[in-house]
Amino acid sequence: MALNNAFGSIKPSQKQQLLSDNYLSFTDGSGNDFAQQYLPEIYEQEVERYGNRTLSGFLRMVGAEMPMSSDQVVWSEQNRLHVAYNDVTLATATTLTFAIGGATTVSNVISKNDTIVLLNPATGAEITAVVTASADNGAGTLATLTVATYTAANVNAAAGFATGNTGLKVFVYGSEYAKGTGDADIKSITPSFTQFSNSPIIIKDKYAISGSDAAQIGWVEVATEDGTGGYLWYLKAESETRLRFEDYLEMSVVEGTLAAAGSGALAAGKKGTEGLFAAVKSRGNIFSGFAPAAGVLTDFDAILKNLDTQGAIEENMLFVNRQLSLTIDNMLGGVSGGANGGTAYGLFENSEDMALNLGFSGFRRGSYDFYKTDWKYLNDASTRGAVADSGIEGILVPAGTSTVYDQILGTNIRRPFLHVRYRASQSDDRRMKSWLTGSVGGAYTSDLDAMEVHFLSERCLCVQAANNFVLFTD
Image (cartoon, rainbow, N blue to C red):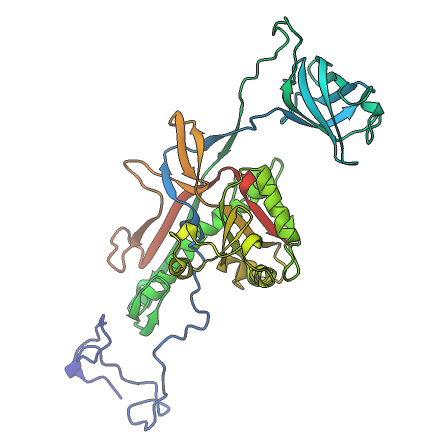
């Protein structure tokens, strides 16, 4: 059946409606024409069999995005206030030695007449002593403390200690000076800081469609994750490309890894970036095999004890996969309120409705408030949920902000513990760029018979005070 000349040429319509210039006829023969009595029943509406497929949103809930103009972001974090050393050796009955000059123990700042506590983790023994001499030996690579113990003739005579003990710990708790003495032996302690940095990476994606395909309309009724609804044709694919790219913006700074020396990526000219998981593995805390029984809080209390030794941030958020979420629910199921804990919604202005609307459930243990929610990224079958044991079960992220020294601004600033920095200037904002090229779909930039939609971003993640984060692994 030929097209009636009265209708003229076929023109696409942005609305799904019958017009005189967009009327299609069947011309393939084999009964495939308007004389055919029964036409196939076609469902116009797309079936959403995977629900909401987007994975981003995690960083929007816990952090912020801020511009920067450099190739690198550098920040400094404060060190401990009090003097303590690990890996101390009992060399003789009255002398202690420990290595200095490395990355962590850079110098010996214990002075003569300082009073110390010596701990032996292997036996649980402890003893107090006063330092009678403090020296650096071996060209600054070894420190020696001569001590006089308060409750025994020497350290070797105290229960739980023996010459040759290693892995001892020592910390200063004060000092004791004789009458009429000066302070010439006191070592001045200059506060130090630890510096960290990260570099942004450039992320790109593109969607292309030829002019011929753009002219062939295929209507599909959709309701996409970004709120787009109604009837779409080829731009549906562009919409999904954008959604996927927005997920990549978050996934790249969660999974990112710095290229190590000698790696294939570095040889290929790729530097990488330090993502969330890599930063916590390097500078944070890892809890492996968290699987407490119902009503048994031993494992969870171990986390609290560790938080006490770090920043002791009162409010924390738990982003977990389904298995860990159920494990925590089972653990709390056998716990009553009162001293054991209770419900907490302080972070959400004490509003249970607000917390539940954001997908969080809160509980309190000790002096800490925890807000738990499922992290879709860890459950999705196309990402970490693809296998039962993906290595990562969840992460504990401290809420609030940290104070750090910004090397660029030259001042102390407050920032969320977790935030994204993206490249931007007055002339170019690279947070999320998109543009059209080609000669189709309104773009007239080249002779290419196609429309290309380009996406670009340049960003990195700052994980500050990573010692307050806990990564849960299989």
